[in-house]
Image 1 (cartoon, rainbow, N blue to C red):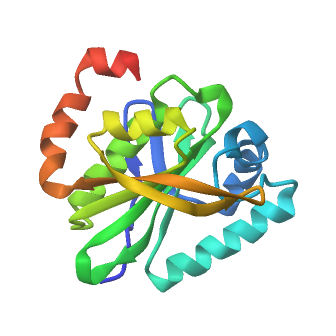
Image 2: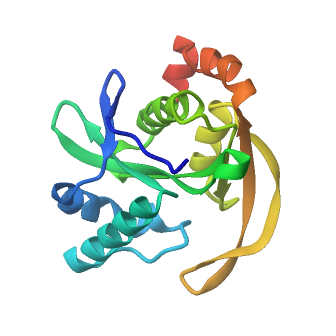
Length: 197
């Protein structure tokens, strides 16, 4: 069954919902920041045309059933502060990859972990996935920390997996199994852990 979700997700501070064209100006600010995209396998967006091209690609991938692209919305402002997605869905293995990006002004405040917690709950619940995977440039310590705080295990190194700004980059691979999530999800709700995120 293709990936499909007819509703958004909510947490204390955030809404996590399918991206719309109205989100593009805010997401341009996020993805147009070289500090944000420094360790990612795509170039920073340089204008609204880059945002529209990305939106068209995401719509095509979603229509094919293998991707769900979400905007992360700050409830206080109603504005997108980042995005996250499930992609490369493999129905026969009930697995998908997880990707995410967050605007620099929101780093270090636990927003991404909060958004991903809701997305993972949905992935292992309503979407009936069995395994989630993520790839992270080893230099991207913030991203690795988010995953490990959510219970992902580092499983290996893929050498020269990505091209980042024209340079081959290796990535660490992370995995999380559905049966591991209740334990890691409960630990992640610890107020001390929340403060440290």
